[in-house]
Amino acid sequence: MTKKLIEYIKEAEQSGVAIGHFNISNSEILSGILAGARKLNLPVVIGLSEGERDFLGMKQAVALVRSYKDEFDYPVFINADHTYSIEKAKEAIDAGVDSIVVDGSKLTLDENIKLTKECVQYARNKNPEILVEAEIGYIGGSSKILDDIPLDVSLEDDDLPTPSDAKRLVEESGADMLAPAVGNVHGMLRVEHDPKLNIGLIKKMRDIVGVPLILHGGSGNTDEDFKKAIKAGISMVHINTEIRVAFKDGLKMSLQEYPEEVAPYKLMKEAVKMVEKKVVEKMSLFNNL
Image (cartoon, rainbow, N blue to C red; front, side, top):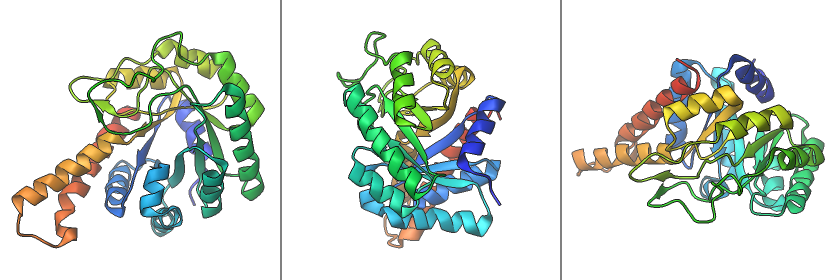
């Protein structure tokens, strides 16, 4: 029987490594992620944004992940990523997720605390084992290829959240984890690496906030930045855009190579393989393998 998600997160932190979190919007991407994770025998978290949930179905996604967990007795967990309202939070919690991200990053601190606290209370009443992750500082709202960094993303030191505000958010809301803006950006730049992460701020956040830190917007960052961020206190890394690109590249390859093929399961094979390859690459990096 697998351990609880919080146990894996704490073990990762103690070992100086990070758990991989990868988003899905269909069962093929899920198959590729799980193949990669099982190849390395590492725990993995499957995430779905509100848009991904609307496409695949929240209950359906939970059932898919649970089926793998039960069949293989494998540590795979499901997270309701970037949830913006109490209504959507209740929907995900009721469906049986293992964790949920309450994204109040565009709200005032007081409004963020209020929303996160409401979600925490609902989750605790439904199932005390559900982890609630708070978010502070805006890093953009879409996992896609970018020509430029969106103007409203918090990148400069003066725009980034302070450790004291982060601590207040966690303490007053009761959140189990925190995703702070530390120079990270959703999506990835088309022609260069994303901006460097603020490693000093990550360390200060972890020392002061007292809960595990999660890095969102991991696509596009350098290997060196990941290593430094994990060493400074990041316990989980979210990757979405790079998974989407891998899936698209694999599917495109199949469509070009077999233009007359109409069987979806045959066309999807290369896409699944490309996702698996990307997951192995990222999880190996996060775990110093």
